[in-house]
Image 1 (cartoon, rainbow, N blue to C red):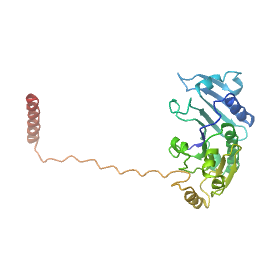
Image 2: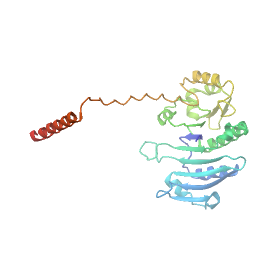
Image 3: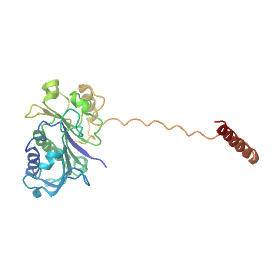
Image 4: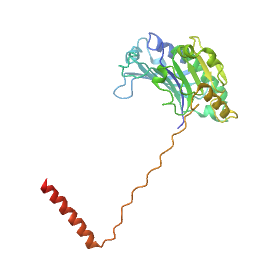
Length: 279
């Protein structure tokens, strides 16, 4: 099943007092219904859970701050998009924390809203980008993206720490550190559809008005983007070629009679027994 991911990494604000409340309040205020809010994992590690946002009382979210993790299900009243939201942040940045990286991830499987002809894909992408802008302002990430399909492995933790750009997605979010390293003009002049500056000095760079790749001129654009950023692939990596399987070695067929076969097996067993005695 295909999915669409909005992912932000390395927040400058998440975990600070009031940061969770501001995030939930913002999602609620712009028309998303928040439900199945949980802290920890389902089962033994589940620390707390609420059926709806309205069930949360003042002070209840302290457990989320202590556990440094929470998740919820949100559905849009202005469209049919339903998504899960996962947020976690490490205890420190030294690498000693059990949590390897700080992230906010919004995932949805209702990708038809963005790709099928019977829907207004550009309008839905506009709504998605508006949500991303608001989440960016709250979360203050170092780096982020929006993409359809698999995203893991394209840009890793070490890439972000080094402010490297190994891959370009449909929508890309570069924090102030990236802009300081590459320059505002570098992102501003990149081939694509949209460039916008964020309040913290970061920027948003989007390739096209909708996420669907089946459009005229897309291949030419992606080639230009590859050359501009110096990356091997844009949007999605090529699948590695499968190595051909070596044919199973066929057993050599011996032209022996039944009596001869029995004699071969008997002699082999005698040799094995003799070797064992000698040991």
